[in-house]
Structures are given as structure tokens and as C-alpha cells.
Image 1 (tube, rainbow, N blue to C red):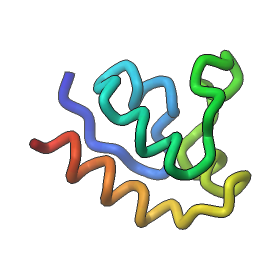
Image 2 (cartoon, helix red, strand yellow):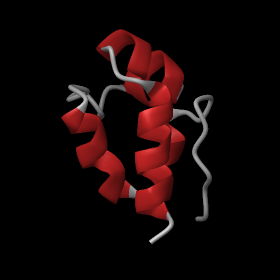
Image 3 (cartoon, rainbow, N blue to C red):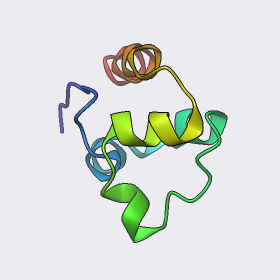
Image 4 (cartoon, rainbow, N blue to C red):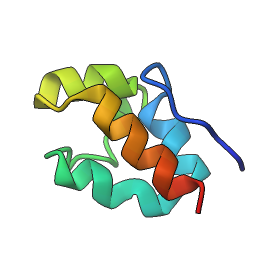
Length: 67
């Protein structure tokens, strides 16, 4: 699945498209990826909760997924 990540993209959509993105979420302190509510959060919501700049993470994820 080819996905372009935006700040509105759901965590679950990102993980479904590419499971190898999980370390990026662990890096930001989001260790509960299996939790149903975490997969329904947007990237922006997760970043706000964990104090991570959303645009930086969007760039990292898109860079990783484009390889």
C-alpha cells in the first residue's frame, strides 16, 4: 500500500501500510501501538500528547516509506 502521511493520517493507517514504521512511534515515546485507541488517533493528536513536532515526524515517516 502506497501512503503519503499527513498530520491527519491515523496511526493505524500508517502501521497497516508499513509495519516497519513502528520504531518511529517508539522513538517518540508511543509504546502502546497495540492499544485500539492509539491506532485511531491522528498523527497530530499523538504528537501533541507526546510533545513531538508533527511536521518533523511526517517528514521522517514519508522519507522512510518512500524507500
